Image (tube, rainbow, N blue to C red; front, side, top):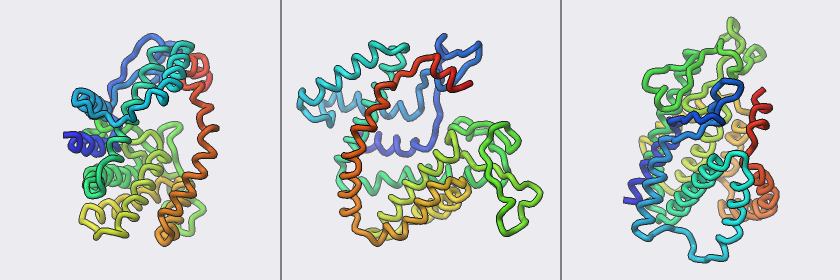
Length: 288
């Protein structure tokens, strides 16, 4: 049952369907703002199902060491207590708990099951990539069913929409429209889409070093790589260019080096958590 829930969650991972709630603090100058709104995402349902299923089965993957939890519990308590939005902070921490439970559960699966879990993610990601390609060709969102999967409504004329300039490219195919829409697919920004696709492309290509490609794998690469290129995300494109070099390196050495760098950066990365519950005034100023 746990394996089925995790597989369903991975299938839903690229979609951003959510139910927004609108308490008074979610309004700014009479306007509703989604980043102030508590949201129940579609992916939260399998996260909750996984957590409570394991809770009732007494199979939660957390280590049985109370000393690990006391400092974190105190930190969460004071962070929530001094927050201007305690309920919002508590919900945020609970979502982090669900995500940690999902990560530990997934990491405990043996390698053959992990390979199977990649299949539903590749399938939904192929759909997301195909949607991105269609958005680029049409220069607008498709709407319909995709709206309920998280697609925003926009065209290339929408104010503030992400574009990239192709006028300097060595061809005149887009000379009538030099600023082209960067595809969003179901994500909030093309850079988010690019980061998601880059990570999944890396995982897929590294898995091909040990296994033969399946039709679903080839389908994802066929749609995913062009979709990544069209996002025009410089960081993601640089990462894509480095993949061929990484494929010839020893993954264990890369992991060890990454662990060393992460151990150095981790203490500094915890500093923003002190402000995990921003005030309404700060959010309003950031918006304006």
